[in-house]
Amino acid sequence: MVIDIEKWRRGGYTERVEHWMSVQRKKRIYHLGSLPPFLLVLAGNIKAVDHRWNQHGLGGDNIEGKCRSLHPGPISLLHWSGKGKPWLRLDSRRPCNVDYLWAPYDLYGSTAIFLEE
Image (tube, rainbow, N blue to C red; front, side, top):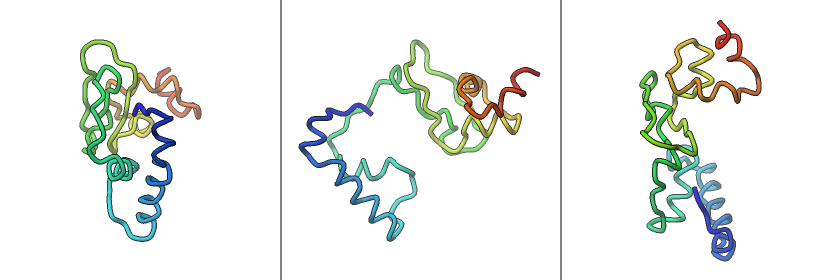
């Protein structure tokens, strides 16, 4: 997400997002994690980010065990959106190929043994 921070502050967007988060706490109105409050607040004022900036869907599009390949060309951000998280798949010894890109950043070292074998 790329935000014009001055416009964000002038528009009171933090408070507006927090409002929808508090509604969610009282009564569950959505099931998609952190994205819905932003979509509710920003409505039609969003534009897609080119995949070279955000390779999303590496978590399998919410289908466990479904791996995705990287888009061709340069990519700036790898986004494991979906249920298939690299730390879970590596630790369970059922990784997708792209999960190995995440492994060096594992602060707990739980995947280090697997990578050395």
